[in-house]
Length: 239
Image 1: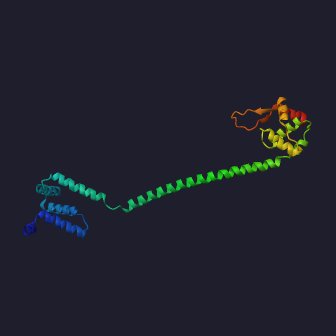
Image 2: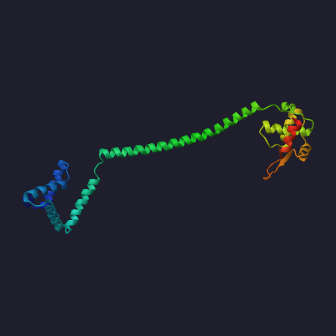
Image 3: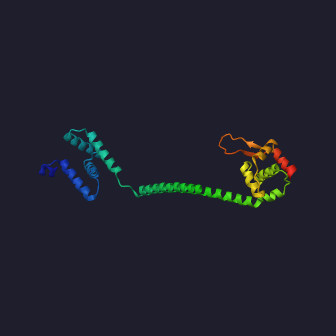
């Protein structure tokens, strides 16, 4: 007040300037310094520090025509906003880094699972190919020449040759269905004679083979299969 009377300035303005200057030198908050001054003055005057702050707020409010409680709330909100802007502590940084590490690990795990799944899909065709090759080799080991199979049977008629060839396809080629072309290609290889359509028809009429129905209508030629009657005939009459 003495300085204010000499400089004709407001005592509160001088007090705020001094508090801000002291805060800049001590790196303390101006409001904290004002509170300290209020508490010091309260101890000297035996008044409550909050009462002194209220008096200052009322004095400022009278000059600004604002509510003293509003001014106090503004000061409290300002202090709260400054508190929320405080730099993160080491503990906060460690927690953030730990969370980021967990997220990176989850991404790496997901990418690893996707890579493993892709590699598995690539391996499937190779596995299927290997199985087919093993089956082919196994079949080659158990297969016998068509001529040797003919020689093991008692073949007398063209129908007998047809049935023996159909049996050969079923046993050694794993083909239950056959066409006239399939039969003729083998008979021509073994005895240089094809099987004519008439021979196929004769075997159908005797019930040794039967036509496979073409429900889709896409087959280029008739397909046949051995019947139980045909298998019994081969077993009893030709073996």
